[in-house]
Image (cartoon, rainbow over all chains, first blue to last red; front, side):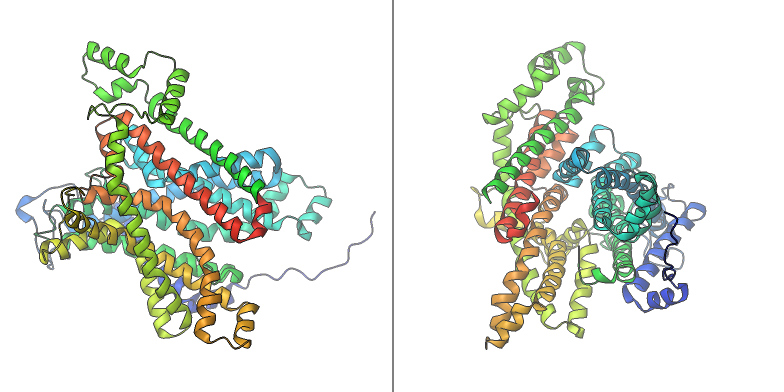
Length: 294
Length: 315
């Protein structure tokens, strides 16, 4: 019983410097990180400072062109576009982070539970997943926000619900792929409970998958928030949202087409950023997945 | 195979049943009194009572649910409160817009994506491949309603060659109807095509590494014939799966796009039903779209299993 275990070499540790070197060579990662960071900084800055207040309408300054005073000009209500874009970045990032957070906090435990327990419980979790997938996401978000009232919080919940099955699926798939591996058997033999094994061994080993998925889900959540706000069901004025800005710009498109350009670019910027970040992270963290998409 | 199809069919029916329950609960149980929701806060008590009687709201919840489901099986979707016509009539009218819209963008995106994806894969690693994939990467990030606004600006406002919205109706003008659908179809198709082109490219690159491709070349088949007969054909399987998954996004996209272009389609019907609080219209048309999505997923599963026998065991 007390036979000494043969000594294995310690597991290869990730070398922080070499990872950074690899990361800086990955074009997707660098571009994605720069774009995402840019949006993040714009959003955080807007909490403390924007060039102009976004809730003050000044019709005398309406539809100003680009100038040193108004970097991107003003909209039909005289609001500074740059300030609106910065505040819109804050809305997008907060909504996306919380919605993806909801999805992870509920989805990952469900997926792990399904993988650990198998049987009836797994079947129930996966069927519920299928059910949520069956509801076209934006359609149900429209339903939810219209029954419970439009607004940022309901938009977050609506988008969050659709992140749950995604993370449940990824977590379960990752955990099932690990099952039968020697280190899990060893942990089991050492007397650890399923719960402890899941926390100590499974979660660290599927963290890569979850991080990559989170990055992709962030970009989808930003698109969803823009769509809901465009329909008037998401963020309400005086709070700024890129989708809402597009909706307001649409009525003015014949006279001031530039108003529709900026929010669109902002959405593309941030969605592209998180998508590229996800691609780059996948290349770095999981070389086997390199060529796969979607 | 038959056993697999049977199991899937059971799954399909269970999901449909569960979906109908969810819709019923969200629309009729959670808001409390549907009559109050439909009439708003300032409704007179007698109007409320009349509507409750008209909608059969005095019956117990289970009875209402069962009669809704049974009615739908008989083609009775209820009578719209705001339009005062049968919902089935509204739906069949609106689907004449939504169906060509969805089908058109599905076809257009496939027509763009497959040649582009194949071309990119054939020039793998070259500048042109990187260029195309960069454009596709951006295309995925572009919201379809933003493309739509730009298309309206260019083709309806500047060039004045296409309408910016509205729909004349097929019986009034076929050409006019086609013109009205052109911009919406393009707006829905472009982001879709970006995703598909990427999938097509990576699927083809995977396939081209397979042994049977080398075998085909070794037996003297030309590069081109190998590519299309053995490469593209096999690479289409994952493309088909993604197409099936994209269907639900397409449905969601029509809600926004139909609103933007003032197209009288199903998505707009649902959106208007929600804003006018016409729950009768909403529950049946949402159920229809959800059923459609579930059915498409079912078809993809079956098609997949028919192509790849290994998947049948997973049922």
